[in-house]
Image 1 (cartoon, rainbow, N blue to C red):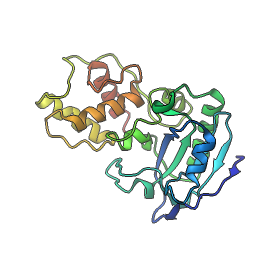
Image 2 (image 1 turned 135 degrees about the vertical axis):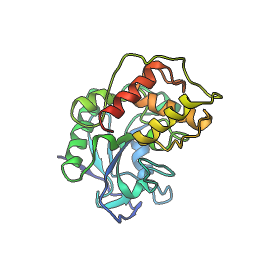
Image 3 (image 1 turned 90 degrees about the horizontal axis):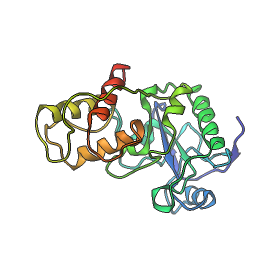
Image 4 (image 1 turned 180 degrees about the horizontal axis):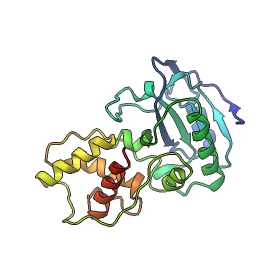
Length: 239
């Protein structure tokens, strides 16, 4: 692949091969500003790659090094996500500065880059996730406009659709076996959602993150029948 070399000083030693791939949006007004921040030693943030809206790919940190993109996060029990992942920043102003659809040239470049990365490391489909998946109480990116379905259809990541499951929606404040089972399902998929049987704010954040990734038509933190059905379908894929 063709990369534009834009080295960042913001990295340290990786102690094990990466097995997670995390997608972000830059969440800044322009790609130029985002690139400058990712290379600023004072910012202490970075990613391995940044993909511009026109499809240009900037390489900031070697994959063999630990970039600083995930922050406090968790996926499938891994809490040092920086140390276990490759991070891709996708230029988009994000929810704060005018969130918009990702141009096709950019999406095509992301798909090609993900395939290139997976050619070097063992990264399962269930470990191709968004920043909001690994940090649901803090992050919204890359968000509900990112074409997760298209990425999965290209062979990278999980996607499932299913008829709505029976039963009333589950929301914050509810308790019981249904909530416990929901939390257990999210935990099995990879989220940090310890089953308690109580639908609290943390569970709402996880539901919302799940919806941004796997049910983008509805992002409200309420586990309705279709949200639950998609979770079950994903788990049946062997996630």
